[in-house]
Amino acid sequence: MHKVFSSSIYGAAHDISHVPSENFLIHSHPFYELYYFISGDVKYIYDGAIYDLQPDSFIIVVPNVFHGIHVLSDKPYERYTLHFTPDVIRQNRRELLMGALPTLQTLHGEGGALKHFTPDAGALGLKPLFEEFDRLYELPHTAHPMGVETLTESILLRLLLHAGASSLPSETQVFQAGLRDLDEVLTYIHQNLTKKLTLEDIAGRFYVSKGKLNLRFSQQTGFTVMEYVNRCRLKYAQQLLLNGLSAAEACQASGFGDYTAFYRAYVKQLGHPPRLDKREPAVKPAPLAVKDRLPFRAVGAFSALHDGGQAEVETTIWDNNGSVNISAQDPAILRDN
Image (cartoon, rainbow, N blue to C red; front, side, top):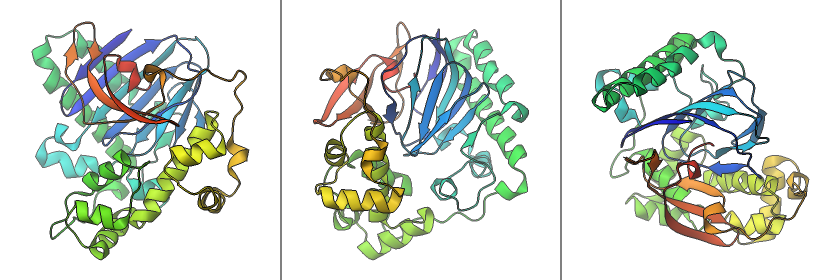
């Protein structure tokens, strides 16, 4: 079963599938995702941590954070997913409702009332709201945009009420003097993560001095620009190791040119050498075809639906041999299957 709504500012789906995956399907995207797990035999990886999902597990995926699923068997895998940008929320409510969500800062332990992972979210009362998408699906298409926007606001309001006053946003820090929104900087970093990236290159891209870029970036994320780049590369390398790549392959595929630097950084950040994270597959897989390669990130936002419920999207698929841009008509390539 595949029920889906899609526009330029949101993507909502209710899916039931029965196909196991050989490895984790890892990707990132520049928008929020709310993931509500109903049933199945699934592990979920989020920012390097692996969770065994139970019914009513709920995950808030922060933009540009690596995440993905590993479907372990052909048991029915049922879930609701909601992807959205802030534009889906009416402007007079946007700051309040978005303030309930985790950010990069709260993800890494700097406060925040709502956590990114709730193992038993039944008490939050979210499931009935997600189930309303099924009823909305039966209505005429003209009702879908308003319905999705209203349900998204209702879900965020429920999260805000659960979080309480501690989640109310303070005055938002913004980029100034020629530096565009932080989301654009983060998206640029993730789109070029496996290429050569320097602070000078990134600052030049956004027409701002290196000092100002580092200052504003660290104020909002808690990291300097290059600390964040290396942290993301290491998390991605760890997930490649969990998928069976060797340490040398993970080093190259994640953007590190020098293995010694990679090894030292890995031990410093994760506390153990790369070999301890390598998972040996039971059977060494054959070289992957383009359509089977590991999904890394979505380029752009959401796409219009075509007949048969398939979304035509452009994505960048990564493996240890590099990247290739393709147009895919298989919605599973970007969704958490």
